[in-house]
Image (cartoon, rainbow, N blue to C red; front, side, top):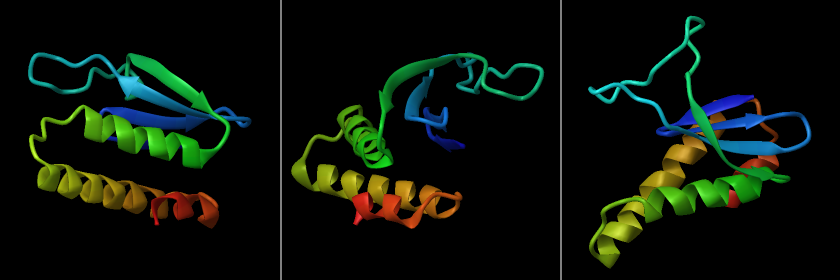
Length: 103
């Protein structure tokens, strides 16, 4: 499994889910890729036993790293981020109960 969301990549090693962060970009902000088209450098953020835990952390990190300055902006960003993650999940072959964390 490999799901990309902005600067993050969700992977799985069969027993746990891994939240990776892309850390290498060129001067124009483009991802640096290796000869196979894979992202060259990733930094593991954390391992999670449950997809729900990973998605909650992804949502929190995305909102915390934003530059919102008001509660209405925070609420808008939170809702937008949840919807984007939901759309990513719906496009992947993931068991339907994983979606429940975003309800």
